[in-house]
Image 1 (cartoon, rainbow, N blue to C red):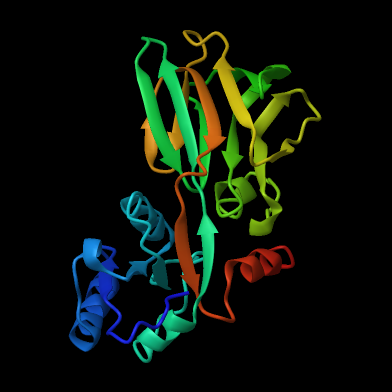
Image 2 (cartoon, rainbow, N blue to C red):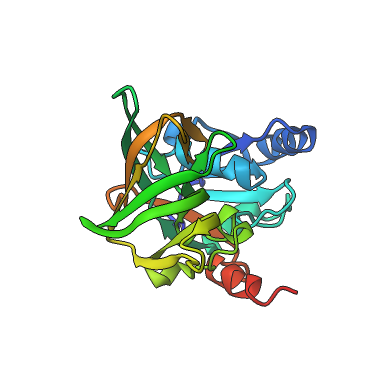
Length: 260
């Protein structure tokens, strides 16, 4: 929630490249003004869920809350678009705090990588050969060989994205869980994934990486030919997403589970 301070709420408008988003941003800037992102009380993001994800990443280190308005297809992380009464909407909005996953690893050439993911980290086979992975959680081996197209780790905020398409569980934000979801698993044949406490550390080792190369994708960053990757929530990074009073994210997650 944005507190009233007796001064004008400073807004920075960010818009996706879509024509409709850009046109709306121009009208809103004329009506409400615009200031640099570094000086804003709130970022208003105009676009779809993908653009919201880009905006969230851009605010790491600033912690400026973000109010999204939908110009995309799904808009799960967005509010409905309306030009009127925007400041009042922002002041009344509920804040949902999210933390990213941090993914650290090395490729087969020994080169390190480090990335953040607010939705999910996924491991995917690069060729026709199935991926073979060893799964370790908090230093305890849980699967000595997972064979399939890959696997992903999703946050509650990202559980309705790729994770849901892969038949993973939808996670309420208050659940303090992570979803570990296999992608077209071949072995263990009956393994359907796991729900993990948000405090765990997850490690995937790629078995036979020369024959069965695997890439890692952390939101919009891809790393090829992975040897191993370690994934854990980063509690030091917090971003606030603002939602209209009747459209908070917990309600959307609940409603999604009853969609026919």
